[in-house]
Length: 222
Image (cartoon, rainbow, N blue to C red; front, side):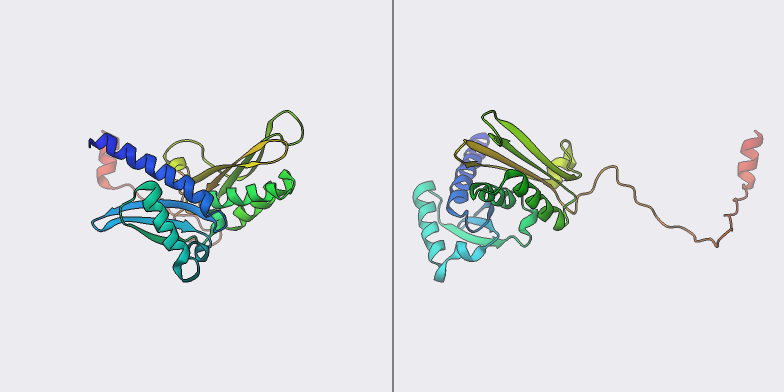
């Protein structure tokens, strides 16, 4: 298999697996999956806010999930590992799913949007942007944005420090789309200025001007 076809097939497999796990592990706070090829098989690293629901009682859920991965996706000897998301409020997929669940329970979209925004900012995010689109208040579709802090949209910092997720929820008026973008707390902005403290002076004292050296005097005279 050529390198191009290999990477394409791996990408398609991960996309299909991601969609499947998102539906199967919605209650566990599913936050993403990584595939790592090893000599013994394939490590499937599942990120979840509630890892206990992924493992199941006495590991029953993990065993059933392993069998399904072999049967549906032909993954050779899958070894499932569950990684706990320590701060779910900083994971865009988890928060998008929670917002969609709140909308499905009948909570008003503005109340749900601001509630999720406050929780994300309270967890230490540098910025957040939430977009809810669809038939919100009438028969004509529109969108509503909720913003706080700074969220970069382009460039390497945006690709490196912004976590983005999109999901949808089916309501009686129609389908609503939910997009969540989170600027991570450790984001280093290119225009950030760091002030290095130098020599401290007493109040009213001005720094003394450095006297020019002999070489500097000669250059200025020339």
